[in-house]
Length: 214
Image 1 (cartoon, rainbow, N blue to C red):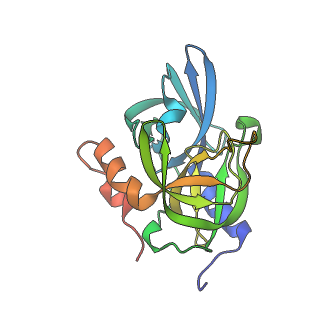
Image 2: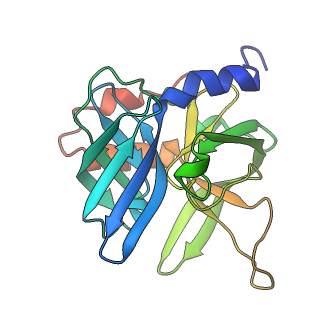
């Protein structure tokens, strides 16, 4: 499409807005991915990435590590906002997920299986939109993609061909009949996440960060 970037340029544009997240809990350490939403240190991730954490650490792409404070989280909608004491960070650009079509090209960036593989990019397409999935006692309306997602990708960006974040990766579906199911990844659409994130920011002082592209 007009204005679309090549895969290398998408990666270069977004990678500095992607962070690694480690959560120390009473039972051990878990890992995930996050998205920088403002230059002064606000970070988006999934609630399940930081659930039960005693200490949350954020590692930026330039190898700076920060202890993060939890600003707010929503378990039912699997979103959380963190704050680190940093300035001059590269904030992600957010796009309009309501304009997605099945077949649109997307990429995911994150830490599949942990920090050792941090900054991994995978590509694919939008496989379905407005997919309602019930997980436990909650139903979520999600973007479906065949871009490879694994444990550790949670909280990271799903990105359109313009280098804009249009979803927050949240799960990979497993089959009842085998240990894994291929090509069934899901992300929270930014159009759904935006009002929830604004609510988590309490007074919505940062709502302009999520102005969607026309």
